[in-house]
Image (cartoon, rainbow, N blue to C red):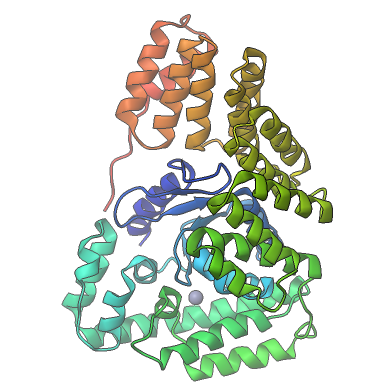
Length: 464
Ligand SMILES: [Zn+2]
């Protein structure tokens, strides 16, 4: 079981932290590794919020010290799944959830799977499988696994297994195996929510939604629904447990709901455009989230001057919101005002309570753009600070190499490039650059030693 899930997890991890290719702004990055793998989003604001959702739950689940990483997947469908020590959450799930509590409930349920040691190979692979391909075999429409063929390794095997094993077998095997795990994860989730004084209403809402949606076959089906069958007795059981809790009617704190709404606005703008964001907040068109969506959309699709005005208005409402300063930095950078952008990012870094690595790297990027040696020197230390927090941030090494090159520190630039390739899994290129760097370094110096580590690195054999 472990053998099959691990390569997938490693690959996803690599994609998650390394191949971050800036799309438009420094703040929202999307990366894709190869067809069939997980496209990952990096964003300081969303990562911080989801981290705040998860932290108390993980603590209640006894997972605080397990180093569970949450990885955001750039996918419109509703999905959340666990692979190894990683919890993947689709942006589609964040966008669809109307309250923090709905996502917290899903995190609690998934934490239940981790704590329960449910590393169900079939479910993990199903979570990644092309949804419709698997749906069709589950519903007995016919085992169409064309989608799985475009994927690699375990996933293709999962699809092939379903096809070969026969639809009925797959259905019974899958649902039968899951039922006990799902019930366990539900019960654990209720316990975590109770321990943290939160309602299980959101979890119930999500699962009820999937139960009713399943009857509308032919409509779009979310992967979460496939991996989480919702028989009536399960929902009934969950409903009873949820309602027994003294916290059933407790709402999310208002500030958290606002952050959630702002996150939804941002995701809507980035993934579906401005109209989608304004549709979300038809009921509160003047609220902070609507305003935020509007500012993000103006930055992405409009002119920087108008966007800057909107960012300033947001800052009037919340002067200490690091992500408003970050947006301001993004706008100023695009307006070709790197010195002012750097100031804005510096504020964002200072105000960020969770110390994301993404923000110092953005700060460094703006400092490099000034083209002034003193600023570029400072960029080096800011980017290094970012990389200390977020060691595998591929973008960070690219900017670090750029800064070193501009300062004429060629060996350091080559070592930074080597590191970037190393963490992106391109070991051949990593070794080439590490060796180049070594030729210009003193034997035994710290940089030389690090380069030697890269040169000596042996790639673990692929398990499948
Ligand atoms: Zn589950």
